[in-house]
Length: 274
Length: 307
Image (cartoon, rainbow over all chains, first blue to last red):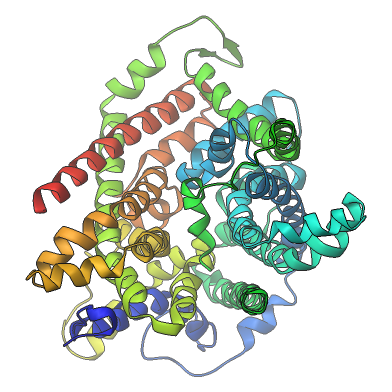
């Protein structure tokens, strides 16, 4: 049997892909299933449908406080990593300079480091400087962690950018700022939005740095970690977890749609110019 | 699409240099100026802190103060104490097993998407990556729910009559840690492999077939060697971070699944001994880098032999 390009297509591969997807999704689907289960334990068969665990979330002030902290951290981290990511991604895709590889390597390094090691190193430098642990320290740390993700999104967004458009704009008398606002920005805007959404999602779900650097103000994952010791709290945690998973999936889907539409538009433009 | 495909960015050639000499100089300056805020941030909050860790690892904790005379005593403790030796060895073995398993089970998926994804490659990649973007802590918790004594796996197997009493061997051991970590890192392995498979010239595979290679031979002699850079990236991006994983061993590892991160964390908690914590961190990084380097060499050698 032969597929396109004469690449052999095997019969077992689609079955394998199905099993693999089930393995990937099963743990994520289990949380919502049990969050509607009318029992405090996570066993089959299910005990009936209830929304009481979700209702209980609204009256939990500690949880609402943690949610507020997560929002503050998430929004700040998203903005900071995207702004810093824009500088670096633009420098890398637009210019060529000595030390480029080393600089890129350093910014991308958190992807290749055990998180606990830079969490501990940040904790040491922060306490050493006599700075109090707070949401600010969480934000500072998470930006380092989110930068590689923001950069990846932005680099692929900027990479397809046609430089001659900017040159044409400058040649026709537009200022550098005007060119950025009227030519560059509209083309790269989808990548910016994507980067904001991805960074926010990564920050929302990040645990280790928040755990080490948050002091007395927990974010949602740190709050959940504290609840895990109590078996009775499990259903509430499952409901909260389901909400968080839903938010993450929605944000990522949104980011993907924005990016793909931009890609299609760029491709269509390219075809037109050719 | 692949969010992580940017990892490969260094291999992409930058814009062709313009011939005008004056502009080259200015290009360099502009590039450096533009990257400097990000670079300074990374130097201040990533590079310097790591240097501090290295410095601390050569100092000693003297009750509440730090004695800054150079000493190797922390390393003697880190490498000599049986408890740290055990934790280091176990962490290393677990991360090695996790990365080998993850890369092996993920390769066919990357291959499938690259060669048979057709017009829906992006959709496939998105489907595969979504679970990995949801909260890591929640996914580990979910595995605890699945593998626990009164958990999904046990109660499920009981109710369909495969077992007659709950299995205790599912949770709180290294196997549970490995399963959970493989699940967590799947997308990180698939993306780099996919990116490198996309670059494989399809006509080379056709040529191999035309010249009489069967499926297996053309895979071993053409596809696998050409996708090796992706396999190596995938291997490193899984192995190095997992060695220091904290949440998974804590939640599903039990006594037999404790890893080095727990010992590192302990040095920054109540029984504070920062220099020892620093030495453990440095030791872990050095050992895992060396092990990863050896593994990559072995992999290259294996692939060359298979050719």
